[in-house]
Image 1 (cartoon, helix red, strand yellow):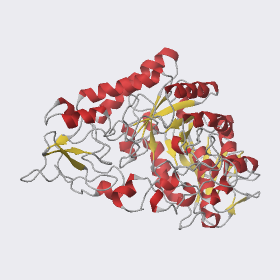
Image 2 (tube, rainbow, N blue to C red; image 1 turned 180 degrees about the vertical axis):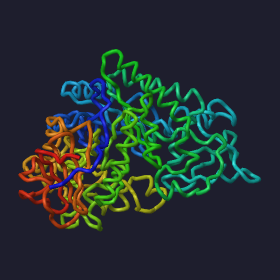
Image 3 (cartoon, rainbow, N blue to C red; image 1 turned 90 degrees about the vertical axis):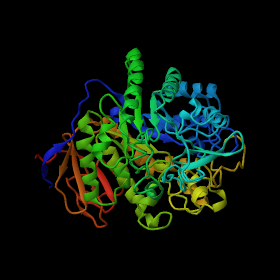
Image 4 (cartoon, helix red, strand yellow; image 1 turned 30 degrees about the vertical axis):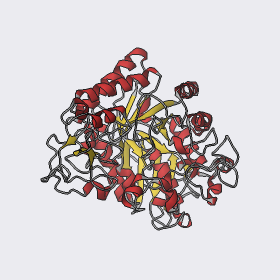
Length: 557
């Protein structure tokens, strides 16, 4: 029998019902979810058709990837108009239908807002190119004179996260070589200058436009960005962003002024909440070095939540997971927010492949077993959780896409397949035995925008629903129990003593979750059949790469 460690961590500071505090949100990558027109690209009507499936799965809401007008250089994360719908995805009338159906089914709906940069097709950038140096139009971006005798060297040594220099030089209207502009992703995504008040005023109007249409909140792209060091000095490690594919340049990210923006956005959301008593959510993509820095973004007058990516990047090791979880709950939940757990998203290698520990699709089932165990662990943790589409199907990463079909700007900028993201964005398989696997509804044989491998048939939704042992049923049962058991969701977590490579915790009174990170079976922490397990779990045994939940008496501290 396990014994409890001396102290519990975490607490509930909820004073009134706040739906987001322990919500489970499903991330819809619109382009790859469901195609209603037969053009091979997912769309809003496809999302609407899939809502009953998501309701049956048991999630609380959905987050939609950007569907705004865009030249699609980064598949919507290069926005040309923040208050409309790209024709490839539908129109505002279709969005309103989607919003109404989500509301009818009791699903929250979040939009993905991209405030750090816009598209080079945005009207503002066209105005900036036509205007003179020092103009108001250029002050909305980061334009600067080049270095060197002819200004032919970039203003500083920063590198873009997607490869190459972070600066591009323009040709002035008179045909001469001109100033340079900053883009921390691609040249088609110029960074906005948030020191210009016009930028902040414009984004407040964007928020209100969508809040007036009924949305329940926003996922905020690059939420630790926006402000750059005002002097734009050289970086001590200019290749850090490019090497890490992450926001690690302290001169370009996590500047203190960014918190002013989130206070302003929070006040807008509070204004709408006051009208009907329902909170509108702000959840940020926050990449910062420590949980303490992370916690600054979720103070009570800033973002409601921020994705905690450390669990996603933690190695498959019990001690590493325990340390990561403990730090998050201590530093983030202490602000009055709740931790927002993620295991995957549209920028990461899919969980099944990541946990396999070796190249290959499923690595003899090891990656799948670990991914199932990790899912059950995440759903047992206090706070909120986000599930990327296809994770509930156990989809592995598609590793062998031909170079000629790759669309990720990282590949186009670097020529390298390292850390490209197309493999986790392949359109979902819904039914049948051959591509498009029910993804395209409008015409037989439509070719999806990224090719689906033959083995996708094994993971199609129709098969998953019919097989009670599937990933889908594990997620559904876990979500149902999470809603029906008072110990789960928000609340305290108490670590229990356990054998090496086993993580065990008590949630409230009468619920224990344990995960065996090792390969060999160990004695189960409590007697009896588990309430739910990620794999076969005989009475009294916890097999390797398996997680389970039990109800019963918990060891006392």
